[in-house]
Image 1 (cartoon, one colour):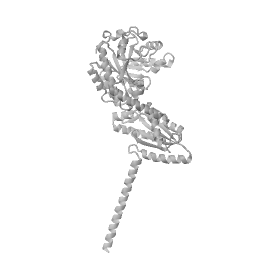
Image 2 (spheres, helix red, strand yellow):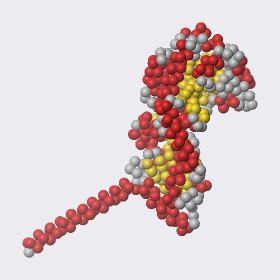
Image 3 (cartoon, rainbow, N blue to C red):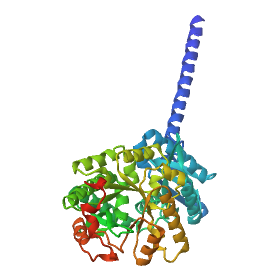
Image 4 (tube, one colour):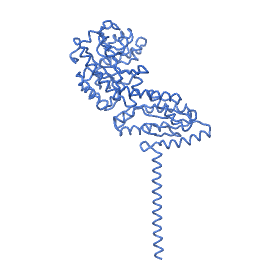
Length: 480
């Protein structure tokens, strides 16, 4: 009797343990399934979960004769933020982006994070519905992201593929990704639907990237220089250094093509450092020729996020024994107005180092007078879009005049770029613009060509360039 009771109790305990073990196994299995189907950071469906949903959607579309669309969304400008501010900020941005995407797709659609800063959206409907959703996503992503009081700006590149028009089930995600990469190569910030020709374009871009890497390694990039002219004396005050790439087969490749390529693939830091070094070297060489003028270099948003940017510039000035005041750093208005502690700190370091700061492409952004006051800038450059229409547009004249007056009220010099004819020159001079730059005076040219051109008393634009180039006519602070 006692033995039977003991055996029964032992069996009961083993049964309970078995049940507990089964429950634990089911719980672990459920957790693993959740981990496989849900992204741990954003809570969105994973790629595997999205592909399973896509299989079901394709079967339903085939059975009902309907269509569906995939949107491949990649965040632009995420990499430099993630690298510059760290993974904690990057992860917070991804979570916010995922929340916005989920809000865009709404009920009856699925959003998935497929890796890094890339997402897939699956939605019922054809191209019209997909494009409508893509526009909504673009607007949502373009709103500022606030992470711990820091404001960050992102855009998105979106590729669209419609089933069955743009491919079978196995090819649909790949074709949407191809369309997205094509958008990115074009600069991002828009959407496009799949087209077979995109594969050819991407192969061409891959070849161009390979050649650009080789050009950087072999020192095949070069700087051209475009003079900046004093509007009153018509004498040269300086020159802007402009990056050029003479491709052995393609000829001169526009910076608008290869600079974004360099930014996307991590080459811009090295190229930017070379531009600074070469500009300082050239300024020193001109000084030895008694040719004294300030040289301007363009600084990208990627460079502004480098912790060592200012020290890198100062190292180059010291190597070539030139004063920091001889170097102008041109920063676009959109980059200058980024309201981040990092950007503000970089501006402060530039000012403390004695570098001449210029706000480029002014008038295209949304600067306020209060924001401008906080920047350690010495000059503004009016965007060429306003200069182009000066002679024909009263609005352009009003805007240009307002910029000149506002800048002067802040004790900033004003440079107008894109000056191509006498009418533009005369109007800008009448407005009180301080410096002029454009084809009316000279196209960008090599350093040696600039030295020869500057000695020609009969240069284009009726400017008397030669006297301003030699030391006796320049202010004392630029004696190096």
